[in-house]
Length: 281
Image (cartoon, rainbow, N blue to C red; front, side, top):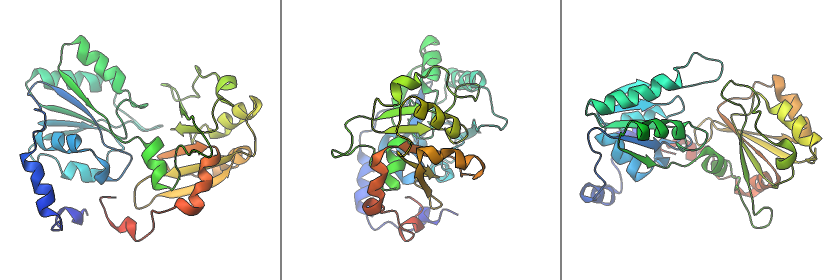
């Protein structure tokens, strides 16, 4: 499936120089939390790639591209720990316990999370436990979908002509409902651009709250599904039409951006069909 792993690189010498690079040691008994990026396996960082090759155990999430696992140490134990809305999922406490148990057994443990591990990914909760249990850890940031995923859709998260601020918002709480701790009146007009994660299910209700709090109903809205992958798609509409999407079967995972920056897609839409043929992104 991932034929790009078997092709001979035209930059063999260039990448071979990494063999002599002084990467930080991935010590036995430690845990690395690594961001896998928004979709394409080529968006993982060099430190993330290093961790893949050194790990004894890889605990990975649902949105991690399977191509990344093909880059891993072939002897590594791979454990799926994905969480998807409305589907049976492992409990967070059990996932964190596995990290601790593997580390105490002297394993090099890679916690591989989609996007960035600290952006709406419960990475903070896992680090809290590791610190409490005196487990050494390292955080390797990843490209979050709210920035990298939008870039693949030709949407800059900021542009000097439109916005100097941006708000990142999660579309559901730990129970799957609309976040209760959000001050909708405060955020509705606080920034020209609002980027929403995991918000497709509750988008009609979120739109109602934002409009009631003073957001322009005609504000541009774009939904980027399967960002940075060959089947990426983009749906463009306006905030007041968000309710029409309730039965539209919008593909997920998806990142949503509200505000004027989506207008740049008209000239910035670079991820063409020909480019999508490259499995690395």
